[in-house]
Length: 147
Length: 435
Image 1 (cartoon, rainbow over the protein chains, first blue to last red):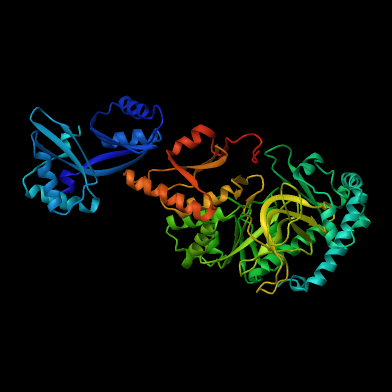
Image 2 (image 1 turned 180 degrees about the vertical axis):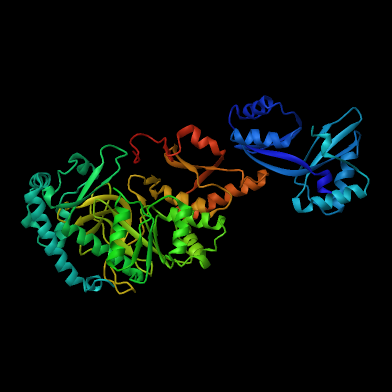
């Protein structure tokens, strides 16, 4: 299941320092990498930028050589109708399967669909994917994000 | 024990010290204009040294004094009596130069043989000496000491790690002499290359010195090689390695029938009682070419005068805590960068790359440590990183007895903003205690 639905996400450690986000985005722009989804978590003095991009291997090497601290991990994505209760349904499935969600972020796909990205503890990833597939929720394959 | 004097009653040792000190003071007063001038200015002469207590009335000698008399200005003998010259690199000005007569070489070899005898190194041992050979006193110091006790010495010097490992294995080396960091590097390379350190090698003891080593590093070396860790302490201005050596009980014994140690307050120069932390000062009492009166080592440590389980009555010095010129005073508490480094090596999740930033908050000093987070340790979660910070703050409080604010930074920040070597930024007022 992980091979089929695991999506590579890059997390980048950023100090809260003027211009740092600009430097990440410029490095990606210069390498012609397209950001498909992103979320930024922050504390008082540092932040973590999480990205799903069209070419994770290239992004990783570009950011590494530019000196960024980063980590690659698997997340998964589901596509749901863009209407009330959709997010609830997914969270319910995971909750019933006793799976904690580390974090989640979302974006609106086309006019009627939304895409939700979830990070769960890596040892629970397989179980999460199985539970979701069983419940009929639409898992998104990595090709949706990658080139 | 190589020499009975190491376990002699204190009175006997002190009688010998006084006699030798008096001879040395006569020697420098009459043969070195620098000392005569200093003694005269202070209104004391060689005859004023009547007991060991009088040592504290004598003037100090500093590294700068050695530089000012470059190259041979403090020698008491003409060069035709000198059989060896060593020199330290002069990163901050002229190098310092030290010379040895035949007799000085005998003293040096004697104290190195004593060091080797801490773990009974002898004819059946193969000593792999990875200290650098050359102007640095480390390589040749260990070399002659190991030869003196009859061991087979492999003078491999530094570098070429893989070849060194091959020779250590094939020659069946039993003793390793190197800096602690190089010994750890060798262990890592050996593991990568598929050696089984305890099966393929026969190293039973290691002589480690020339740089500070945290307890974590020492334990890592014991575990990796299965060896007894022997600490070696010395400095070329006094003789080289062999000023003090660790016994199997982990106590560093000063060979004080040749070098008298004192602990002073680094600010006032006052001699401090045993058990107090302060700057270590040495007076050589048997050297001929370059005797030195009260040399300020800048090393901070503590002395204890009590008999050791190993049978030696020689003064015990604790491992050097740090350099007097690195010492920071934060709200009245002494802090050494090495302590900060030690905490970082204990806590998983950070690199030992750090910068200490000192500032004032109102009247109080504020200490901040910037710590690098790298790819291997970066946990993707604010919570995990905050926990790491809290853990580091707690460990710093436990070890340093002060509140330290930890700031997690990106790896390249430290290099980019201040260059690798600069570990301390002091933003406090200029009248502060740190230069």
